[in-house]
Length: 93
Image 1 (cartoon, rainbow, N blue to C red):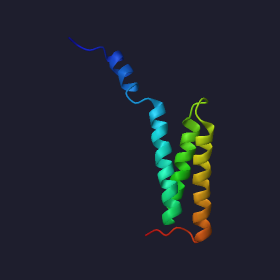
Image 2 (image 1 turned 135 degrees about the horizontal axis):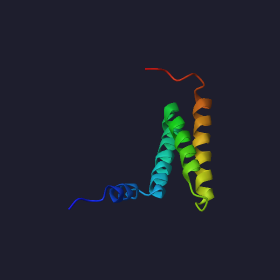
Image 3 (image 1 turned 135 degrees about the vertical axis):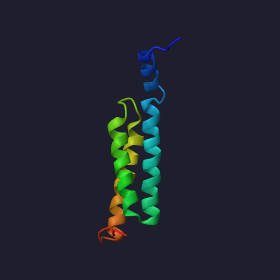
Image 4 (image 1 turned 90 degrees about the vertical axis):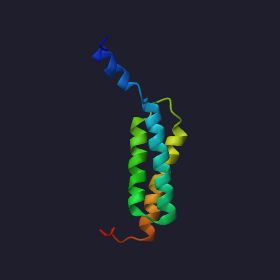
């Protein structure tokens, strides 16, 4: 018996709920922001800022605003601190 292709598509969309994806982006953003603060990696700070913006735009209105704001402030402050410690542009190699 053949499966209904419309039902298969509908099941594929529900495998990973969007709330889980935003939580992963939140955790990745925090890790990269902390790595930027501790190890002074500029690229890590930029990834943290990108992840915090993705989390901010994809979060539901019912999510905890203090967690979203703290991630955004952590990533922004890590970017500022990294560039204050070494204002030279990032090297290619």
